[in-house]
Length: 254
Image (cartoon, rainbow, N blue to C red; front, side, top):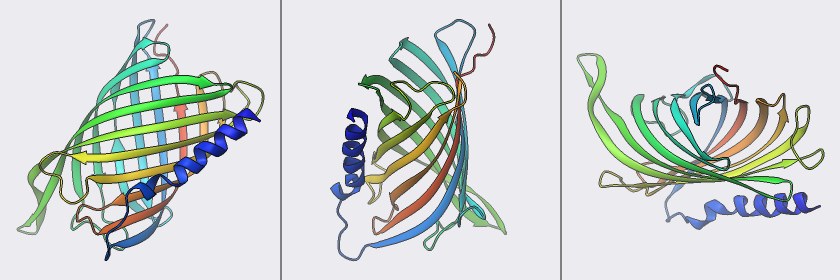
């Protein structure tokens, strides 16, 4: 009963998170239907306190028929305590044209990030707080001589905060062969001199059914609403997104 009460409260908070940012008159909300297929790996290197973070995401649009984004994001984790982890890494992202109000041209992005992850429990519920800073280099494209190339790189910064809860459905812990419910909300805010009209970048609200395959692997299928403000500040996307993800913490070396 405690876990169900906590889950209900968190879900209600997440459902109303985007209402903190009202839209001005004349704004447009454009819905899209997407699918994200993802791998998250945090692989311990021998018996050290370091882990290699390997992440890839295939983000598809129009259910799954066309590209939305490709993301590859490696990094290095340092386990300070069992409940506190620091991470630094790099991501390459290719954003494609999609939806009713697409970008002018597909563009690349180089992204550097630093984050702190803090874990604790409330009864049987696992809670994660993740704070992330990103330094983003976004390619501004130019069509010249029939060829598309990067004309310059625009630097922007972004702060992200995610609150996540995993609720076991069988017993007080999530053990191999057991199911759980995962929910999270992540808020993203832009800052820096190159940010246009979208200081509020996006909010992601997510709920999923998960299954722990083994001590080191788990699998999730869920729904995410990505509520995103485009750079012009006038157009918002409400992206209804199927997420399928595999998580692994298998060690590299003995």
